[in-house]
Amino acid sequence: MEEAKIRKLLGKELAQDDDNFLKYALKRRDLLDRLIAPDNRLAIINAPRGCGKSGLLLSHEAELRTASPTRNVVIKRYAKDGIALGDSETTRDAIQKWRLKALEWMAAQVGARIGVPKTREERVAVELAERDGLLEREDAPDDPIAAASEGVLVRIVQKADCEFWLLIDEMDIHYEDVPREDRRLAGLMHACKSLTEIPNVRVRVTIRPHIMTNLLTRFDGVQTLRSHEETIAWSADELVGILGRRIANFEGEQTRAGDLQLTPDENEETDEDRVSHFFEDFDAGFSAKSGRDYHGFHTIALGRPRWMLEFCGLALREAPDDYADKIALRKAMHDYGNNRVQYLAGEHAFHAPKLAEYINKMVGPRRTTFGSSDELRQFINSHVLNVTPHYDWPVAEGDTSPPLKIARLLYMVEVLRAKQQLGRDYRWYGYSDRPSLLASWSAEHNISWELHPVFAKGLQINDLGTFKAGGQLRTFGEAKAAGQKRNRPGSKARKRHREEEGRSGAGPGKDGEATPDGPKDS
Image: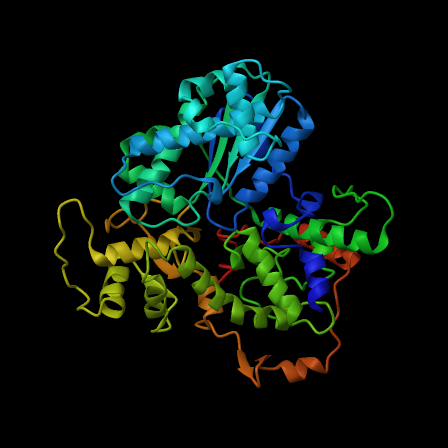
């Protein structure tokens, strides 16, 4: 498929860069209803990169502006708008800086609504609006920072006839695992909480799980904010819905007149049907007859919408006729798997600079399963740290051993996942499901460890038969398949297939759960 067509079909991976995002965004009513509730004064949106934090804030902002365009004052701020903190400054200093910064943002919005300032507070508000570019004045304003104490700013905000909604995103984007940065972000969390004590202020702030975990374990006060956390998790069906709506928008732009209906009735195509126009159904094994209503996307993307869109783009680039069959999907895994290592290494570079090295050493012996926690510890000792399997590391008081730190890191970034045997069935756990599973080496009943399928297949440990030749990706058996006609399953065929599944009583299980036929995603 041509690059321009792929971009129109899938949109941009970053919601904040996509002008069309709100046209096809999948509205998470469970999350949006909680965010817009007036009594929900503080929400800390805790999710990994690529899970839709910025997209959620975009949808939240749109609903706020629609609900009350004049009463709701929405203020969005990103990393470039944050504070700097010196090495000698404390968490208390960070709280004060964040509070002052946020109060100035809100006071400037008040100043933009004032015609002729009559009081000192109004003059301060107007000067802040001029500084922030919300107003233009011919005369040079006084220094608003020197004139405005925190008390003055609080009074300006309290007296305003409006509701302030602070949407603070990506303040942790340049996170370094150093005390100064921890104090800066802990200060942000506490400042957000204290700002909501002003009756007409509500705050939504994003953060990534591994950083929030650091703050929770290093600052007692942050523990009091746990009740304000909102996590984002996507089901397999919801990921298919995200893709289906983008396809509906693309096809609508090609053929329709009038507004696109994104909520199909029973006589219209489902999201799975729309996805079938461009992608063959598959599970994470990419076997010839595999298919689980496209739930394979959830496994491959680790539940992250951005990663799913990246994988779809790679597959469509390998599709010769605008349809990504299993050959194209298998080819996509070649670059996608390598991209995952680079992505994770970049995301965690400051606090885990050896992450890429650890991943490469873990996959070097070409194993996908590591057994119990004790066997995992022995494997890391032997193959990552190059010591004897049963070496007992000296542990300082309050510290953890190197193999446990490495295991916990790989679990946190989802290179490793846990598998628990439950009688004849089993289920998988990721870090977001059970973050404390590797708090120590204490063995839990029937827990074993394995490489996540995206790394097992993307790094060619489970061989997908892909290779590069002449600068192009190839698959074994591709020449034979090229001579065969590739049939796209239409909507009617998919409907018949679902009806037959219903009559037979068989059907795919949920990702991460057991099915009568055993595991479907590895």
